[in-house]
Picture 1 (cartoon, one colour):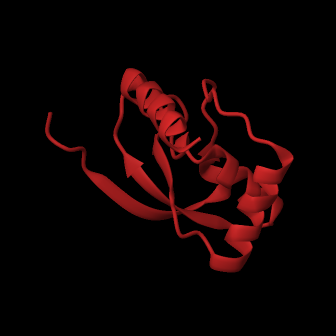
Picture 2 (picture 1 turned 135 degrees about the vertical axis):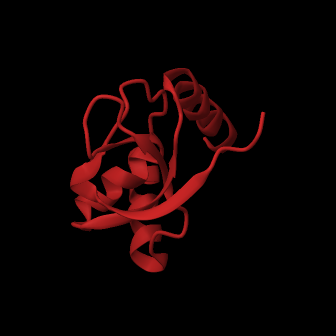
Length: 103
């Protein structure tokens, strides 16, 4: 399968919606570490999103929901994201793989 085209964008937080299938749960300490890292180093690792399948002009988070939550808590207006066109099956599979490989 050829690689997907990826577009890096700075996206307003109000245009980012979580997906309903995220299996990853984090501890309070991990949430604190996310905020500390973002506050100290900025958003070095962008989140991964796809155009939202049912909400025009919105994006659905495929990987990075907890970093998005940290950014919201910190009052950030926008965050970097890698935008990839994925169908529902591809998006769900990517979310599971990303969670298995990184925590």
